[in-house]
Length: 336
Image 1 (cartoon, rainbow, N blue to C red):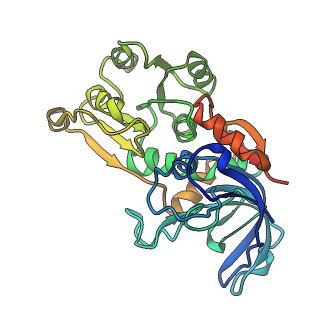
Image 2: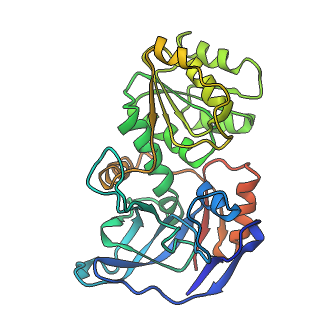
Image 3: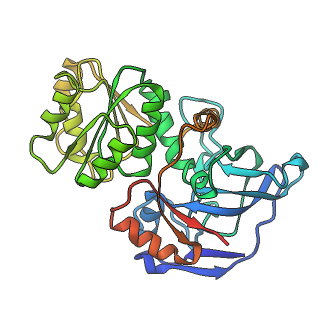
């Protein structure tokens, strides 16, 4: 099969199309003929050497959708030929609260979706949501699951509450916006790009602010009735996380899934205990959460946001586009 291999760490140009052996399903496994895959920041961090446990060569990619080609021993043969999307959260374990010792994410160390075929446990294969294109279906898994667990399972956002999502435009932030509106919440966002704020409003955001403006915290507080939001879903980290602690209303919750801008420079402990805030960490999600997340697409009212699609052979250009941080939604690879 054709696959994008990463043999050395560094720039996007190190992602090269090569011929590699087709995967063979073992007991309990399925091989998917992929139609589309999608990028995540995780792929970029691996490529740059900013991720733990890197082993090269590697086939990156956690997101994929396609058709079941073959199945291994113990798997229902009727699965062959079905149109599916892959849950990249492997071996979560039995505890919904936290993943188990064998947990890993598809795309490292397991060969990922930047390829014509991918092998996964059959239990990680789910029906493609009706009405979605291959590109839209492939855009969902990692970012959709992360957003769902952060917003629903951890922060327990409710209809009528105000949800604040800093850094709108990333895959997880965009799904968090879609899901929060589906739940009936008010949503406020920030971006350094006015065009992204307009896109967010078109998707249902109730207001926003440019984080380059010195008064953005005050503006978000004003837009949330002067009290601050009930919930924050943050993957930005750094100074933004500290600002969110200041911004949250008393009794508020913040679910954090990453820190793309680095560590928090000044943790405001007094605000945490005085306002009785709830600080929640979250990573990926369980099989039950993945299924519940896909159910949100069942009635056709939600569509993933695809920023741009590239041919598989142009994975390096797709990574360059992500490096430039201009995307709104998911970057997708179309697989021949």
